[in-house]
Length: 139
Image (cartoon, rainbow, N blue to C red; front, top):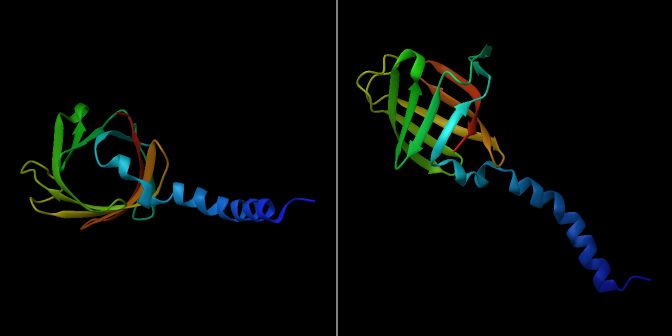
């Protein structure tokens, strides 16, 4: 027969294991995405329509309170101030006079829905609507 204390420890560990796994994968554990270089996954949703993109057409760099979106084929860059509300929520404030999509000062609200060690899925809201997609950390 298993001693009571060992059985109790085993039962507690068994019951808590799913909670530990959920906590490890929750948006609150996504602190590794505040800086780095990212690329888009191959699809995203904009206002309930799915779009396919070549993930090599653009990339994002994020450091020291700024996010820059690079579009080498178009010779275009857009720069945003980034303000983190929590480890799973941030705001992008357009800081670029030449960004044709947004006026200077326009804000995009971003919520990280899920993450793992190399990527996160997000939902962002701007004056144009809602975009849902995935960013993959490459550096």
